[in-house]
Length: 326
Image (cartoon, rainbow, N blue to C red):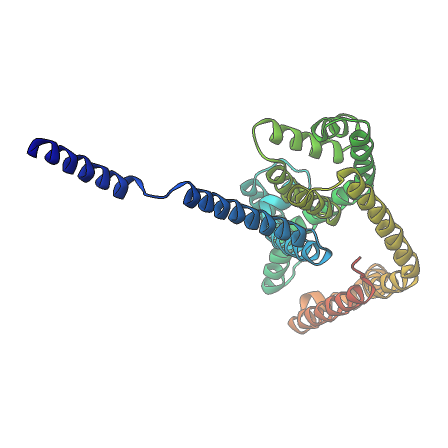
């Protein structure tokens, strides 16, 4: 009898321990837990849907656009401040070191020419610094601006190619290849580099950021923002790019209207700025002895410096008055 009682007690003890460690919920308790888990899942799904709906509101999209614009402006300022980026924007293949060597050579030539004319040492030094530092940078900036202008003129056509390609069923990558193959420079080579960047494993956003560093135009910035927002929120990419193409063409028309309206002020500024140097050159050819005192005498050199500073200030003010950012 005692062994049987001991076995029953041992069975009850083992069963109690198993109930403690495994869990003693009955089927009703497990059903309650399953119902709670199901309700928690539904609440999480509802929260996710609410967050997605909040992200698709016009206010949320506006905030995303503002963030993208601020980031693009920061990258644009960084690209403009970098000489290596400026050389790439101008389409030049020389290195920064070569550029500085060429700048030094140009400044040295200007100094030698000024010494040959018998100018004062301070004038020679100032002329060498201005020509050596200013002229090459101005040429690079002029080439970069002309290249970016050509890019901006052809970019709406490239967006239209992407829109038609998406509507016909082509992937975006194939549309980029078509633009790279058929578009003129500098649009075609820029998209060719974009295709190559995508081919080596870069994401589209990274490739567009790299393209923006080489061609920091507002049109490409808008295109990058549209692509980034479409990837985050979804939507009809063809419709978004079609609206972007319309906006870009409207911006171009507005720019041409502003240029036409400000042409008179631009011509007046050019005439006013060119009159003093033109009169000085004509007097130099007709009466050289009358003007040489400005170049040989220290007081004449000081007057020339003062005149140059005043002329530069006037040209800067006139340029700011007739420049309109669109």
